[in-house]
Amino acid sequence: MGLWIWLVGCAPGTVETAYGSDELHTAWYVVVPGDSDYDQALLLLSNSQIGCDASSLDFTPDVFGGDTGWDTGGSDSGLLSDRLNVSEQLSIALNRENSRIVLLELVRFGQEGWKGYYPLSGAQSGEVLDLANPRVAHADYYGVNEAIAVLDDGLLREYQVTDFDVARNIDAPGSVEITGTRGATLRGRFNLDPVDVSGRFRAKQCSVEYSDSVMAYLQSLLSLNL
Image (cartoon, rainbow, N blue to C red):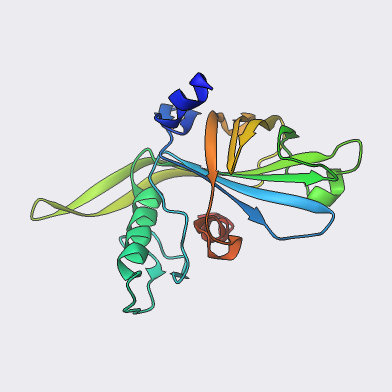
């Protein structure tokens, strides 16, 4: 109990890359609707701060060169400032130097509870899951290695990415292990050996559905292999 209380006041984990170690500032997960034979959860881990609720943001893939690529739709509701804040956070996370984003998809077959070991695979879940192998993890990674800060009258106007890494459907070797659950929180660690990225996390459940989550938008973006 004492260890858990101590962890609550700390960063929700770390991410380790070839460029060093950083504390996580974002650790969310959302349950993904899908095939009735499987349960799926998608985790977002980042050393940037990213809000989970991206509802009412219209996605377009032009996120580099100063355009955030996010349209708030001109809404005049009281949520507009929150939506703009999410858009700004995403723009920073996708463009600032040393930003790291990890998406982990956990798929379980015929199991109760998320706790357990999930071997990494780039294959479709249905090709590798059965009663003898009931869990699998899929992973995507995006990292900004170099970016230029563009200033206007001494004020930051935008970041321009000059060097970045992106990897989709990272294959073995590697794994995700959920070591504990408490309420709507998943604790665990991950190793993405092919891209030399690893870490530990304490992820909280997102309060919105998958379709309205920032994870859904990031999956769409990374599928473009930017």
